[in-house]
Length: 271
Image (cartoon, rainbow, N blue to C red; front, side, top):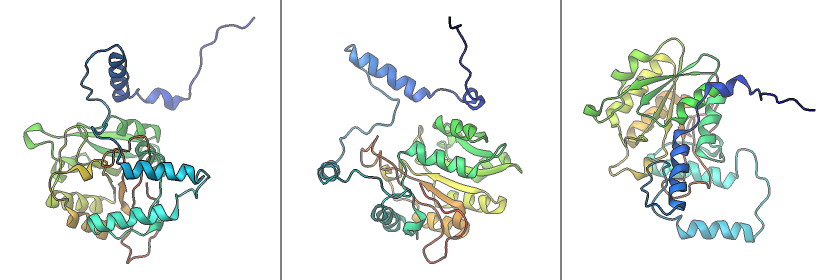
């Protein structure tokens, strides 16, 4: 006769919390299934369908039996296309060697945490923030350091607000802008100040650009080029096609590394 036993999970599981975003989304789906008229502010789902040319390309790939394994970093043609997209949009000098394709935005960010964050390392995250950021840091053994931003200041992320939180254990600045959930953006001067802070304290500068192509004003491209020139391989971008192209569930792309005119050194994986 089998005795009832309590399942024991790995210690890391007890250090994280369930996603409140997914919990709210699940409840919204349940209510909709019951016929309730719901306005769902949980997951960042675009209110338009995936563009036709993207859907057709997916169908064509299946019809042509393009369903086999690809190289681990992703298809060479896709990696090159990502590098060219960032060059055209922001003037950033990434080569395809600086790009890795992942299976989703969360996957991209989590890979970065596992690759760069060790036990006890600190990652600075301005708040309000997307809750998954902190959980991924914890899963990697790191400590999320939450730095509040002010509604009165438009929730802007500034070096003056972040600098006091930097310690000897700080490893990375994780900046998501336009920000989820506030929509806050930062300008050229603020980005440069944050780059200077990262350079002075020898930090990785990770930009989550999930909503970057949904801005209503020109992107501060010159500041991004400054970041790449000054920080080299410590300037990281985690990008995704999910929001701008209504491809939630399709995949994720993005680059990091030195400008193309320089030889990439050390870690230059891109998600």
